[in-house]
Length: 594
Image 1 (tube, rainbow, N blue to C red):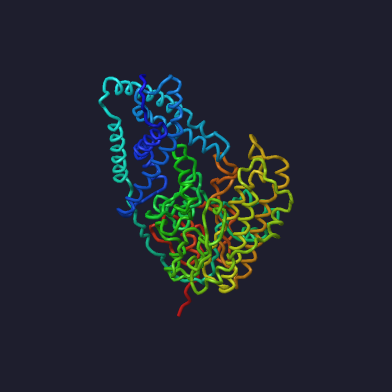
Image 2 (cartoon, rainbow, N blue to C red; image 1 turned 120 degrees about the horizontal axis):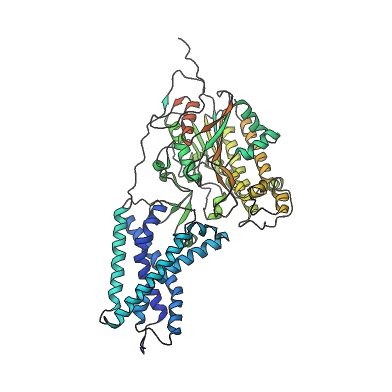
């Protein structure tokens, strides 16, 4: 390679070509997957422009940064051959794409290791990585041949031709993305609840969602006498398991199906978190590991940290279909809902609603911000009363001491995140949720329908599962000392929930029907996650009350059965478009003759 006295700056070349390659490759190789993974559904031309500009910025920034880092390899090659490239601009232009792809892949692996301190997931893609390495080698050889041609036989060909080619690829990639992107689907019209005849007495219904509850944890407490409320309900009612769908069993998709009776292909909810960004419709934030998108997720995290993207629980607008309390309200039932998913913003006509925008829970650790403002609850006339339990105040130190009586709070060696902070946050939000629920029942002791969601148990199971069930981890068990000091936390948490549930039930003026479900179960994880406890298939189903007959046989319950069951307990038939069936049906009273 001949010397040239004047060559462009290496850093500027790497950044410039990296940005071009980043945008060109990004729109063709990554943009479709990004849009699909985030369920971005464009509604207007303005949103299309914002999305295109945002992706262009992300691809250019990543491309320039990663190629600058990888360009050090080319600079080393220049130094090793005792002279500059014959044409440094062509060298960086041609090899910039390979350098970017290699740097992007290494960055993804580094991000994975930094988050999980493990590369086990790479074993599942060993063959793909081998093919990737081979492709990079072949591409480098081909580009080397092209480089020799353009710097010897075709010296009249200028690098700007490559630059315009990459720009053209970027533009056509953006156009192709616009043509293939899904349009916003309308909400399905499933009809209304249908009143049954003859009518029956209106027994109050308490609908309780306990995220992540599993019989494996609850049953020993019930049989051992430390969960007397649950035991009394189970002894008089019907129990079963809720079969979770769609591994790894994200709660967002599960509760969307449970609350509407519709599959996720219809509800449109696939993830646990949503993103709110200027100029774009609400979209979903995937949390699963993706070696193809890890660097993109890192950029997303930076945008969230800077306030450009606001992580939030999926708003009501993302849910296609009506939650069961909206169906009941439309049918004339007085409803109250506390912190269930898809309650923000609360509709003014929905009766009492404390939306999931109120109260800090485990999602706070992922940047979800909550504000106890009047707009987060209805009716506005009761805002001060309903928000009072969520005002900033000291946590219940006595409760935390009961849940974790040890004074030894050093972080266990096998924990990537602080389990004690998770316990503090979880017990705090569940306490506040119980308090506001009790306020509602004190005001309306015969509240016809009250739905309450408790998020804490799932978070505590994530953080403490291995200490309660160390036998689930034969390959990498927790330290015996950690099992001894932390193994009883989950059992104490079940006792706490049982005690507070009993207090809530005692406030009713007449015994209510009670329906308790979870969206999934819990067990040891086989995935790369921040926690060693993770979601499993079998959740819980428990129905008990004066209108519910005792059934000793456990039942298998579908997500789609919950809405019909709630409808039946309130004296209605579910819309015919729903595929589920009522698990239990309250007996009806014959209409007395006139």
